[in-house]
Length: 220
Image (cartoon, helix red, strand yellow):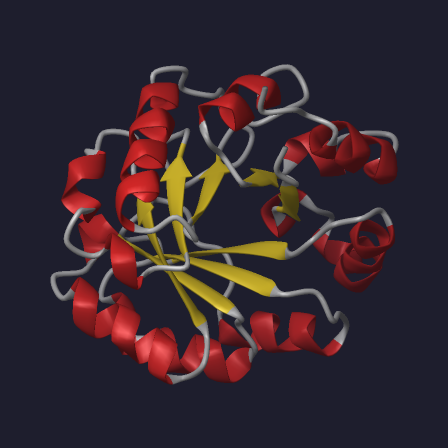
């Protein structure tokens, strides 16, 4: 039975007390922090940039899982690594040179990930999957928090799990979008290793209770 990792999505936290929120989820048992970077072009929303990532790095020892939902990600990979990112995920849909981009991340001593939008087929990863630490399956259309989970993405997670077993058994499958205690079991059963949760954690009365419930899910 695998151990599920939980990555609270800071997009859903109270930014007026960001350091306190980070400390709270760290004490509650978070395994890493998920940071959504949006540029208003690849997705309609705009969130944070390198200065905020640098500030987050100063207040936590948890790995920073930086999800670049931006156009031309290769222009910004280095600056986010310099700001403190431990894992950098770029969107397949936004990058024409995936091998070069992942090499940039790995050559800097960091972990490389690729993210897929709900409508992007898993088969497009076949020629790059062996180079990756993780694949992030979006289970909502990216751009805003608090959306409803797209149930058809379960088939994609299962398909990715099959590709993982064939080509890169060490790959981590991360899922992000509308994940909560009610649907997390189906996501884990499909093959997820890392659950990104925003509202399910920061909208709960007990961060510790929410994280413990998500971690207790079984893949049997």
